[in-house]
Image 1 (cartoon, rainbow, N blue to C red):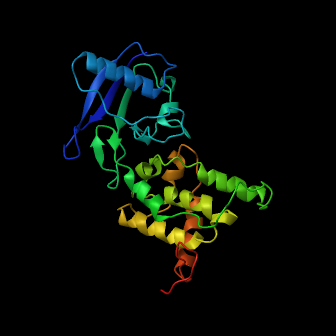
Image 2: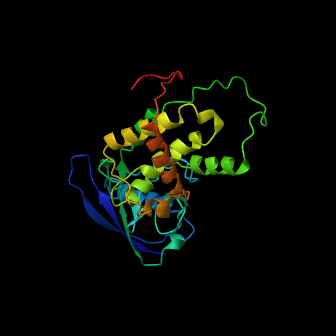
Length: 258
């Protein structure tokens, strides 16, 4: 199959950048989108041109690094799919494909399709850690947890931190990411000590990083490759509200004055 691909090219953070077009032929419908990008880069390198910079790692839908907006959709047109799990058979022969980086103020473009997502790392760091001492590996049934709660916590923990929620949101909000990272600890018994303190710290950090506010568009859920529900945002909002009405707890589990 053949396609015409339009790719965002930007040499550095300060470069204005522009879309450039390339024709590719002889593509297999069974190759992944990233393999197609590899073939494009082989062609560019062979012609003495700079290859397209893009993030990738596991290519198994786990690492969350293959961040591309494809034809206006984060990770492409197939739902609950990362870019590395998107195949060329999902496009028509002769199609025009537009590829851009995440577009968000808090995700500045480093080069071409690569963006700086370290703001996510700082949000997680703001959440701190679980202070409850776990000791040696506990017996699995020593802390009873309802199956429904355990499954929901695992749903939240499936977030791979790719940033599709931010790229899809008209406001560039990171609420779905923050809610998922807060909930997968806050729903379990071990995470209760800092539950409300953690929610407030993470939301405050998210706002200081320049992410927009949630307006319930639900585009984040629609384009999340793991299908994480916006119900977690409601839970985070409730925890944040409660955190403003109780005494905060420091990381040693002690109460301290406002």
